[in-house]
Length: 250
Image 1 (cartoon, helix red, strand yellow):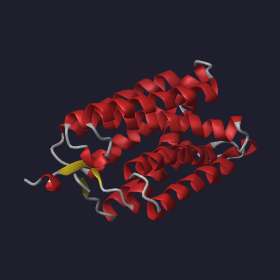
Image 2: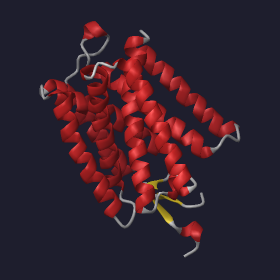
Image 3: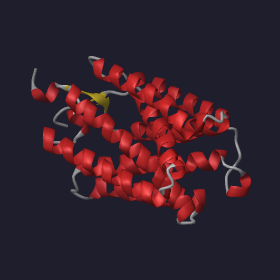
Image 4: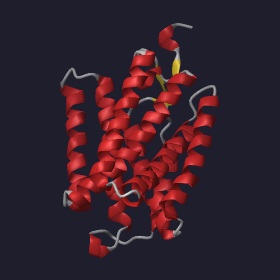
């Protein structure tokens, strides 16, 4: 088989990909908060529960012989939920705060990308077709999802922009990345990871806006009903819009 005909085990990056990604990151926030806060299990127990789901999902994803949309997005949602509770545990329970948590997680994310690139020569998602590449991919995504939660909280709370203000900021940054993709020669791999990272804090602040009390600037919606609605939208998108695996070399 020609190298360009080798398919990755992750989807092509399309508008639908980004739509589902934003829905999944928002679900990660409401779902993570539902378990740790609404069910009163706490951040540590919530992290342990979602970490087990994340590990099982990643192992299933790596064991699969080809791209499966449902399995892929289940794994993405697992990274967003464990990212939410892990970031909240680091920021609040360990007392390092949103600033410290964001700095620590950003460093871990950059280290992950650096080691991945040094080991395999590329961090392009189109190259994710081997177990080693998949391990780097999912570890990097887990760090990016956790960073997104901390960064979203820092922007909304520490920086004082509130949920809507933070959503506008991250939305504008994503728009800037989209413009750079369309009108510049900046590396597509760099732009992909920039957009991937930015969708997480956007989802985090949107999720907080949906379920936080009105007095804190939210809509005070039920975390369970918000999560169920987001999950239903994701499932509809997966079944209505057929996703194809990315091709190596594209």
